[in-house]
Length: 548
Image 1: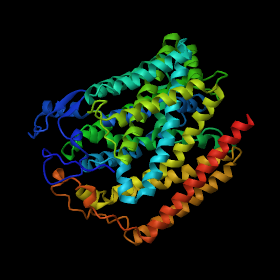
Image 2: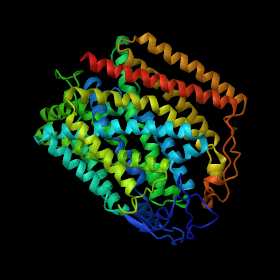
Image 3: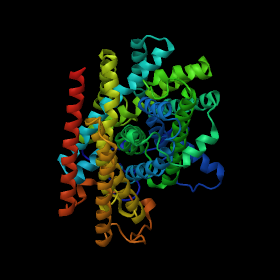
Image 4: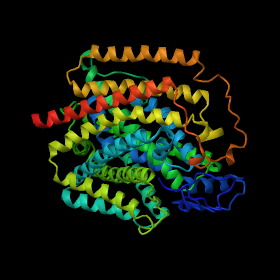
């Protein structure tokens, strides 16, 4: 593990800040805040300038989530089921906020990346387990980003190999400048590019009244016999909207940007900006895709994002189709930015490699080598793979994300209740209760997703039995937790005075938390489920490939 380097400029008591690259001026894409700038933010102008300097982590992680895989998922939902699944996006808003708020809090308060915290607080096995899982999922996700590049290139009439090479060059070059600020400016520009989805919406012109209705009134398209297929799409929407890599990325990026607890409210505002943009983009995609294919033979016949672009062009003209292809290309690149950085940050955490965009290539060779390496490998795999293999990979990356998401959320919840780590910033009772409910829902969806892929002919009754069984278990666990006082009381028992200046002490000074019997059983059950589910999914992938 890397030694903790203490910088004399860090205010207050000794903290676990990684090294001097993570201490200094906040140099954002839209502004700078000096390290010694401790003046109170009074007046709208001062607050706006501060927000502009802080904007970045929440915006990038959210817009990066509307990546190439999301284009396929939302396109499939719109083409096959119209706007009847829009309500899922509204339900995901609080999930997105709570999950990402917890990791930004961990980053600002601890100064330590997500992977390293798991390693130090839960032991080497879980640290290695979580990073290996993340690396595998990120590798597959990164390939799907380049698959998105090839689909956009195919529609635009560009050579696929040239588009992949140029995209890889842009992704690598943007990080290799040795300047955090320059990288963020490129990333924020790409985030602005995602707004191309808005003019496409008005060009296709779906029925706004119908969209507003379906956004707030839940509905299940099709009959009982189609429940399995519909549930698979719903779970894919969850998997593409709330992804494990987001947790690792945002925590490390907040640290790399040198954001401290003092600017917490501005970072939360940044997160809300990102959430609004990602939900608006997702809803627009679902809406204009539904309108483009309504009344055509293409309903229920989704193929890929390039097929969606063609349907949009047939409905609203070639310009709309081209704009969609450009938006897909933009989304694939911003997604690749975030996933590659997530991988490089996590591996740097575990192996003690210097990892910061503030350092030049010479100052963090391993970090940049990992970043460039995963991009190049993903690009090569994409160029060498067949269209069938690409479709198979795009399908199963969502499955793997669904399988691993409950585990990532459980670790996040445990870390945010670790008083030695977060002190006065630990979760309150309401956050714990909500997150525990989210974990239960994610586990249920993960089970259904795994079962639906491993057994494609699974019946609607079987899915309902899974949901009912998980519901009963959830009620029993909740009842026990409240009886034992594990979910806290109505009132917040934590003294939070002076928390703006509280930072986590160096990790080596903290005592390792004692694992209770109940937690050991729970972690063991989770570990067993993950191993079984991953083996089943891998078996299914191999079986499908050999059958083809």
